[in-house]
Picture 1 (cartoon, rainbow, N blue to C red):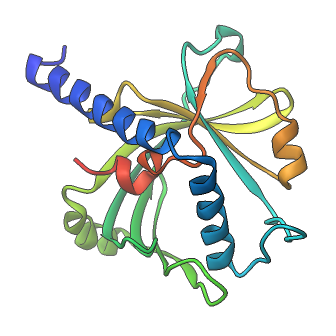
Picture 2 (cartoon, rainbow, N blue to C red):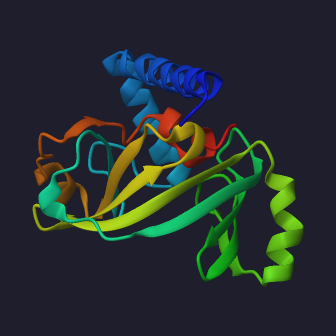
Length: 203
């Protein structure tokens, strides 16, 4: 059973995330276009019209009641902590899975972006994990097919135990736009910073 303090903390966190998402959803069309232009400029891709789309497009959805027909298996528990997160998108992330751990480093998006993932030993993981205190999250990930599209269904734990997110990578914008979310996908949050792992990890 959760204590009343833990329940209130969870509720406050949910309200905070919803407020951040609501601010994003009220952007004007011109603001959305400017955001698109900024993302394209950072990635080094030409802008509309005639821009080249990214190789893959990710879509992310909040999830309501999960259909029993999916028959979820045990899943894989993942812990993630951040040693550093910068406003420009640069980050240093430590990820622990049941049988492995890795350190992921990337700088700001752009033509010269560097993204490197290094496998860690148990000793290295134990030494670095304490440095992520205050910037951690844990989840259980399941692989599911939704309308013949492979999704990862993440069920979060701890202060985020009310949160479930399904996400998938599509081969391009045409395939991404063609996907129709089922009713149990309650809201799309693909472009909302509030639901980025680096923001969810704030304790």
